[in-house]
Image 1 (cartoon, rainbow, N blue to C red):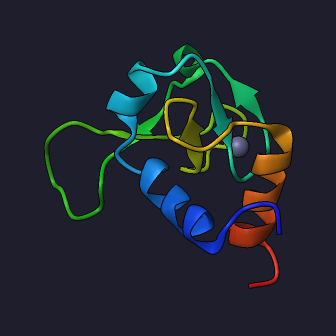
Image 2 (tube, rainbow, N blue to C red):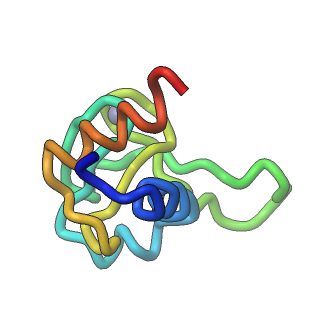
Amino acid sequence: MLLSQSTLESVHRYCHHNRRLLERSSSAGCVHCGATFAPSEIRDWERDEAMTDGPATTARCPQCGDHAVLPSAAPIALAPATLAALQSYWFSGR
Ligand SMILES: [Zn+2]
């Protein structure tokens, strides 16, 4: 496996409430569809379901709309192979 189990599990944390992290990122990648894009391309943000007010801080992918955006400022290499490994871990055959 390309990535360790703990790395795979930790990704979830960077895909939620990641607005501040994205502001420090030069790029971002979607774990769902594999797209890479600039953080400035993100148009949709969603709020935690438990919150009824306050800022929406979880990014949605500009390509597929899923909240599976990994900021480049996260301590995980944002390479196509990484995104592919994460995608297969999170979205297929589990
Ligand atoms: Zn996507």
